[in-house]
Picture 1 (cartoon, one colour):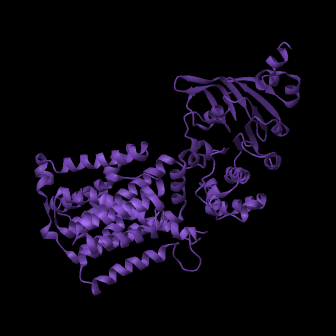
Picture 2 (picture 1 turned 45 degrees about the horizontal axis):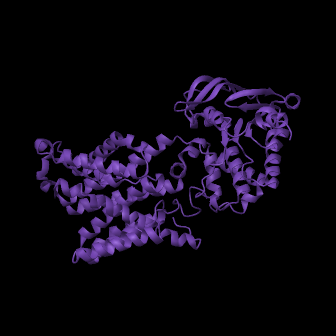
Picture 3 (picture 1 turned 30 degrees about the vertical axis):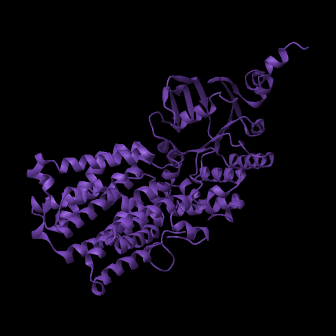
Length: 239
Length: 311
């Protein structure tokens, strides 16, 4: 996916300022940024949930601007977010919805494969998804996103609300999916996810402040300045 | 959880539908009040129509009677003006209802109480247009319509059996199909449904049109059965309210819920509602309050609590 010159916002409020972003085939890009940096807006703009004011998005050689969200999803982009599951529907129904536009036989085959990958879900396949714990919901959300066999998995803070144990599980699962060639764009605040990244982008106040590999990020003090906000703390005079 | 239930040859819930339809085929031979049976079938079909829209997409159409009335008028005018046989005229009634639904499809941009009120207002608009004395040459205005020459109680009864079977068929299909699942997803969270690749606008409109078609068919068949009616009687808000309450009482998004709700409450209505309407209103009011307070998901939720699958 290649996005260039993205400008978007809500009403009169501009949130994204000329954002460029690229995720190559099979690549994992971590999008870091503090609260309010514009990460969710950027992901929503990529998925068509926030109207672009300006800019271009290209995926697998096709332009995405003007296409509905469901059309973008059908082109191979899956989105995993906090609100990605349907709590009153069963786990099985959630998975079926994940493969909504696939042939019935294919849905069954993929669900079977995912049950093997997420054994916690098998025992409770017929219970409402709302009865799952936070970590299990996240796993279901991930499984559901993966049902459609996406080329690019877009995730908005997959670690949000999870205990450290579940964060490790999520990272391990993502690592496995990524090793199978799945491209990922992960918006996160948890630096633990950096171990997945081939490239990192830091978003600050709606602008990309850094884009490069992990090693370059470590050399750059962008995280200190725009992400942790430590610049002021270290510069502050001591009593 | 396959579409086709193992071994029985019908989708899940199919046998219940067959049973209820068979019951209404047999009952006229053993029970003399055919009008009661006809009306019960009509409300069963309307309740399933409400179920298609409200149960599967979450839109509560208080103006649902608008489709019923337009179906009644569409079918009647097709008989009177186009001289179509009543069975074909019923299809015209359904088409008119669907056209009205297409015209009102922008209402689906609203939600919750706004949609409910807007749909009610829309049905009132249709009522005032139909009953307008200036349109007497077309709709016969407020003076009502007579289909005396087409009257055939047995044939219209049979037609309502078919409409009922069709209504059940639609709900059974939705209960077992990807489309039904997508509609339930839309009801829960439209944005998340889009993330699953569901074309929210198209699927929601599909449910809206299906629901309107069922009401149009029921309205046309009702017009044929009573043969003389006034605008007020086919655009009566009580028709919407009854169908909605029956559906909610039994439990939405199930096949069985609206069936049980209609049989119980319409039975109650005929037991005390006609001889002592004031007591019926009282009992009906209490039932609605109790329903909202203690069983917001209808009787079906009682079964679900004890892990019984409700088709």
